[in-house]
Length: 217
Image (cartoon, rainbow, N blue to C red; front, side, top):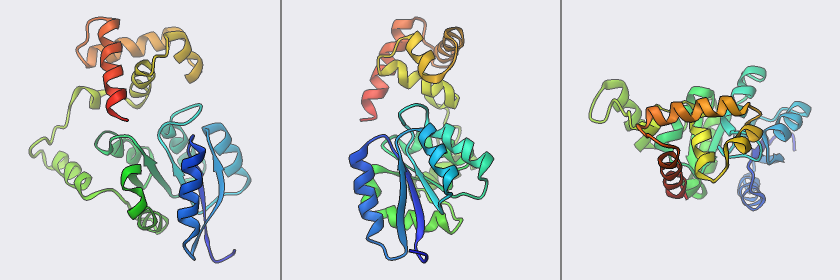
């Protein structure tokens, strides 16, 4: 299908990948040519055949989707990336744009807007919701809410990833294994998170992380 743009999907839910692929394949100018559920698998497959666009979720089997975005922008700097995620746009959109993605769309709004977002990002243009545009402009202009510094927004990408894993019930050693880091390093991240979020104990950290994870569903 030489006239159709090649789309590669990276998401850890097979049912979602199937539905998204069907939605895209209905378009005469678009075609899904590959899928992956993890960062490692995505890198291997994309290296074998670079698509015209990669669609990435934030939460993947082995690492964060932001890690994948940063890798792709380093080794395939002209490859357009669109993020489709269940996570709150106000928290993640700015992070993924900074990492190198061109667009962010939530899974809740996907059905009606994904094709528009795909075409816009393939054309080299940014795609985010109008609400997010207003929020980002507010930050730039220093308007109401312009500082935007809620405690969780102060976390780095890695700290946010650790915070999420804490909320999902993973212990320190398990998080170290998942992120391929030392237990000591994870301990440092946990202390940084507590400091930025003004939390005193590990129990407070766990409760806040659990509450946040549940709010994302």
